[in-house]
Image 1: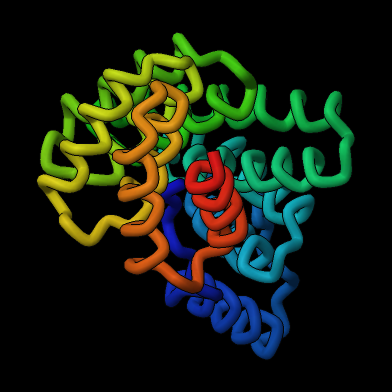
Image 2: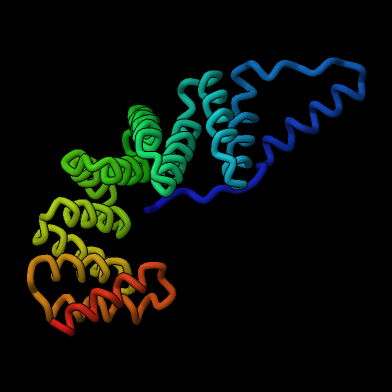
Length: 238
């Protein structure tokens, strides 16, 4: 699932730290961080916490930034990413109620991003993937179609739409969409993995075998390698 890569403290946050140090040196008290101009400091602190895996702190910082600047689209997006990661962590520990709550908050954050920046493809992709995690596949497909409409040459947008079709058992649509991914990027290995599952579920054994084998050739170090090898063994043994 496509997500923005975080950096550690950016220049704006470092500038804030330098100003605080200078203010104290001159004998002044610490200035309040409660003001529209300081939303960036909270945002940068949230990114730093997120990079360290401290999602609770990251979420608190992003929410503080948003409180100061309700139209801060980047902070809403970062909040959505943090809640999505938190939901995934809860799923891994089988805390499904908590996961559902985190995913619902991620949905709200991404929807706010879209309201502020209607053409931000990544927000649609991430929102669609959260809907997939929540089992809301019709909503996922609708959102991911919008992502494809906004960025028709983005293979990631098509891939995620194909995955939504696959989970929704719309195998013909999934196959066509994964093939579109490969038209845009012939080395997009995960599209072959998706094709393998779609062809297998559709009963097209030979095509499924070919797709899984191509996936393993292109991406031998994938975490999905054991699953693909298991599928291949079952198909060749049947």
